[in-house]
Image 1 (cartoon, rainbow, N blue to C red):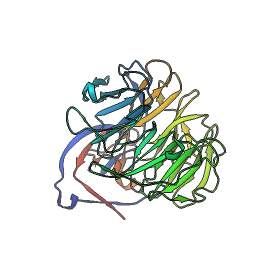
Image 2: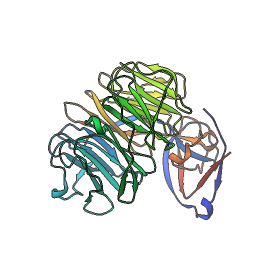
Image 3: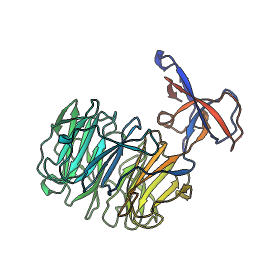
Length: 398
């Protein structure tokens, strides 16, 4: 992992605003007044689950970490929770006439949380909500005639992609400008895409496929890239995703996953991890942890990504009780939601603790995804101390 020295500036003229006290464990010895940030994941502590009496087919959290949205193939097909409360509280920001009328299969927010997309099994197949008003209002910029299985915005919200079950439209992509969505024709795969993932650099979209070659990489302009990886998966690939800077790519590979260096094309396979069959996965906010939702016990697996190969760690208190179907994490990494199949509570909610770390230990592109500030008093490594969180700083690096 590369290490760099951050340079703290006044936000390009922006005044530094206030401070909030955060108490966490120090990851190293920290001097009084030293610049710090919240790094990595400590323990995952299970909290009381929200009242949710049905299985979920999709879950997502908005940008500011205040709303959790779940979709289901049973009524109510769409539920939204206020996640600033404990336990999370079901709310009704959508008028009853605008709620889905049939099975909802997936959901996603755009980059600023102002739009919520829901994919359906039946007509209208895709619904987009404006979440900046109360109640949310439906907008209808896209008309399709087949059910939507997976939906994703890219990192800056300028592209929306979704998969369908129709061979003539397995993958659809649109440019986004306000509420205008313009179709970008894609090179279609030969089999059903089970999952899709935009690379964080905004250049490509990866498709995980039901049949050989199991992966297909398209430019966002729509053309197919030949030989996207050096070693292809050997079985159906239902889980694909990247870490936050796009340097690592994960693909399901039989009873496990493959980890690739995705800095250049073709991606180079680094190693496999025997996770068992997986349903979903993600990297945490600084990519220091890989989290996999598994079909078999222990259902939720966490890996330290600072080692090669990754090292499994056991810092989850109270694992899910059944197959972990979907995962989502808040942007700041403090909330992890794992849905489970078949039995209540269906949603497992975890509070994620962090370490206070010196700013000089910051990996490239890490601080931008974390909270940062300074320690008013010295803290010894492994002991609890106070960090004052700052706002309005502009981080540049050398």
